[in-house]
Length: 106
Image 1 (cartoon, one colour):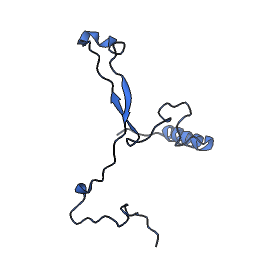
Image 2: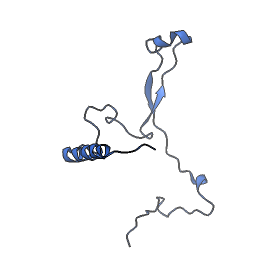
Image 3: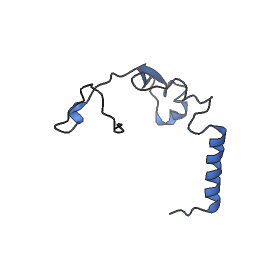
């Protein structure tokens, strides 16, 4: 087990306080390419592009990217399916077809 020093705790608390004060906690940076245009697999998927016709040997791996390997594209989204076969025997779906909330108000 690694021993945590007072300095480690102070640095962590300082970083947390700084992110809270600057308002960046839990948000992606504006220039973060992952944050833009992300959705769910309902919207689109990421699929590999077709492999190039030229096969590479192990000694050619440094040229894989320039040969067209490792290219990914956006594919179609996936349809949403309700999987009731995963539920235990006797499971009854709510009349509205939606899940019941665990935090229901009384």
